[in-house]
Amino acid sequence: MKVAVTGTSGLLGGALVRALRANGHEVLRLVRRRPRTADEALWFPEVDTERLRGVDAVVHLVGEPLVGKWTAHQREAIRESRVHGTRLLSTALADMRDGPRALLCASATGYYGDRGAESLTEESPPGVGFLPSVYAAAEKAAAPAVAAGLRVVQLRVGVLQSTEAGGLAILLPMFRRGMGIRVGRGDQWVSWIDLADAVRAVVHVLGSSLAGPVNVVAPNPVPNREYADTLASVLSRPRLLVLPPCLVRRVFGAGLADEVLLASTRVSPKCLMTSGFTFEHPTLRETLQNLLLRVT
Image 1 (cartoon, helix red, strand yellow):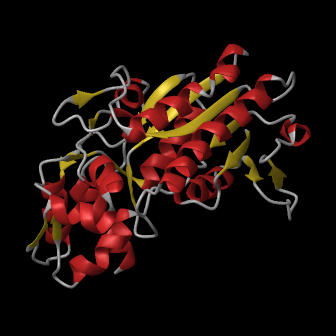
Image 2 (image 1 turned 120 degrees about the vertical axis):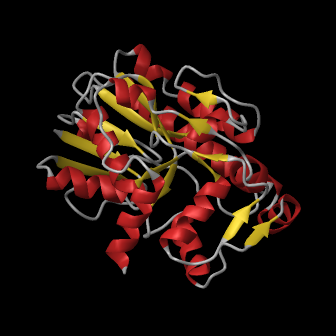
């Protein structure tokens, strides 16, 4: 295939590009600056549709990071990066006659919001709050591509497990020093996935006929308490500390605390599993052991 990808400087985007090329596919990296190499093309603020002729699919992975305290300005950036970017791409692709016939857009399990222990599948409705409203709006922004007959997939990605970046990379130094920490009450569910499995899932979706929402998560979500205890156990370190909700909100801000760190989202990869996808690392302990073995 020939695949165009946005967000190639991000964790998932960079890994996806490497995997696609390793498997013999051609990759066009879509960038938001003047292209510097032959494998780059501009997509923002205007889509270079000429470069997209002959491309089979577009994977759209751009989104403003959720880290930091959510000021009014950052909330707007979080929303616009997801909603406007998706609308821009989907509209451009819808107007092409010889362009890509598939559009895969990154959404997130944040679509479901804080749902306690409820088991969530792709059929579950969106939750309540800022992030669910953002992801719901971003998914709707792909409507022009759907109306034009493209195969559109919403990739509802869970918490990526990688030692390169993301939450695990931030936690590792503390846990290695014996400062393992549980966040909040610890009963909030974490829907995670190994980075390599997430990449394999995206490649699987590219080669399938799947359309609509697809949960990109491992089949075994865990409560935050179990996540912290498992990481400490794999590192052979104690898990002694607890960060209470009030302190989580003070340190990270109420938005990030309540809608990400303290939110409980128990998501099942129903569509992936029924479509024949198999996980190489389906359990958290196995995933962490594999990741940490490679860096020790």
